[in-house]
Length: 446
Image (cartoon, rainbow, N blue to C red; front, top):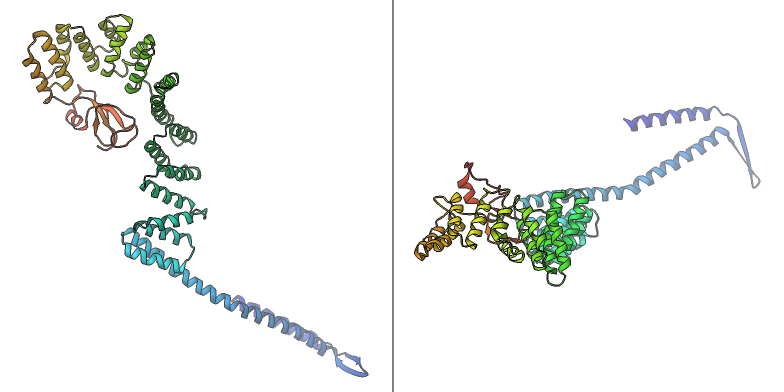
């Protein structure tokens, strides 16, 4: 329609020009080399206009002929591109079906049709990785680093390859580059934390946590809790050579995560070793009402000996704010046993005796029985009974449900800060619905 309209306009213009030219009837004479040429003005005008239109027409033909090869090339490229897109779709389908043979086949076709295309590089790298051709995959991932659009994919590929090799140094380098490009990726922060856990690079862990908090990736609570682990571990490293720095770090760890038994116990132990007895006692007295723990008993004995104060006097003051708690009853019983006040110990522990007393209760009853009667057989019967008793609190991994006797920053399965002081999972299941137990929640799959 558009071209027909233009042709119509051109015809009108030509008609008007022809009418205009024919209206000129005057003659023009030319003199050249003694020869006189005579013609009409309209003929001359017609020739000039004809030559103009002829040159325009020839120009159009030239442009058209010049564009033919480009159109042919464009059509060929379009067909090639369509075949490449089709190969990409089939490659993705093969990848989702885990069909390595088809994936390899179509990936090669992609490279034929879309050579140098980012999608081709990505799929070829994935094919090499699935075929366990890790050297080829690594070359392709490195090639991706030259293209800003797919650089992060290349970095992730190199990160995964180095994690597979357990080369945590290079894995951290690539992880940090990804973090600097896009720290909002939901997996990158935790990946860096896992790498730092493997390498026990505690100082770097603090730096990453502080940066992640400033970027609002993690909350202040998570930052303080994670940093407290790092501070505690660095304090252990510096314990022998830099006692003052170690104490300072333990103090910071206790501030970041107050009343946490492993931190409190280590801090108190070092304070006692450095003759800061009053300070150690105050920390225990302030901690016990919030987080009582039997592991402090040996420290209380040392404080009693250093200050020349009866152990029971210290224990009674310690438990004054939560006399009826399970831990308070046990530690008071242990204090009576230490002072060899067997009847008082027996009367105290009666409050928590049940049909199925746990191991700790049975062991204490064995000592009491031996102290009262001196009957080894009766004492041993309590030891035998402990194997049939109910389970007791332990350090339990909130991710796996596996328990440990001692707390560690990294548990036996390699998880950072996953241990909680609670009942094992199977025991919690049996206690469900019983209101006379205060059951801490275990978070995560068991």
